[in-house]
Image (cartoon, rainbow, N blue to C red; front, side):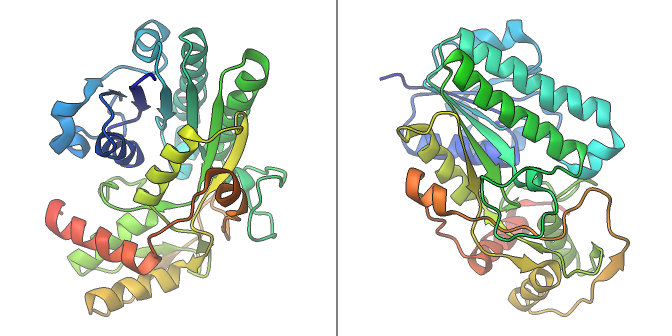
Length: 315
């Protein structure tokens, strides 16, 4: 049995959680590929001595191919993961997200990789009114980022059917938790909320705050990745990676205030281009095929995340 794993974007928020999960399970060789465009070496600080780190550009086939050759599983997390940034910088984000994914899949095919687990996105569903979102629904991306991730998903499925490369795609639903960067202008909403609550300043909510999200704790997502890496009979398939519930942004901010014991009214700004109104995962297929049920409630996930920000983030 091969004990060689690769995590692209392994210095990123979700990638570093997968790296830790692999090491906790006793993986002997974990290779991290991360150009540090959005990843941070600090995310790997306490496990840096246990991994092979390569700060290379994923679009460079000649550098990537030797690192993935013969791997049991490649977890492909590398991307510029931002709807607003994809609108502001469409060429840059397309090149990284689409061409980087194609290069990685080509290297995995040529290097006889056992399986690629691809980080897809629930943004592919767009703003269809039907909830919860089911994998068989027709995609309707609203932003360049959503389209990038959908193209990568299609490529993963195509490489499975045409070239015989074993692939599984996971559509992430608003992942949050420790190590999500709160300082970037393109940060996720909960990391911005964390920064605001600790600095005792009001966050800006874009829109009316009634838009809802299926917030999913990062450790649950890492666990799902490992299950997707091992499940039988799932090559070429796509699964939702969500918690299965939804909460409005107003409710999320109110809950965080209650946890912290403060009262800070939010500010409101105009809705942002490319944002979807509501998002919620149907997790039936992941339960059935991958035997995965998220274990961390939203309130517990917020408490854990807030504790990490208080302890480890210099704001």
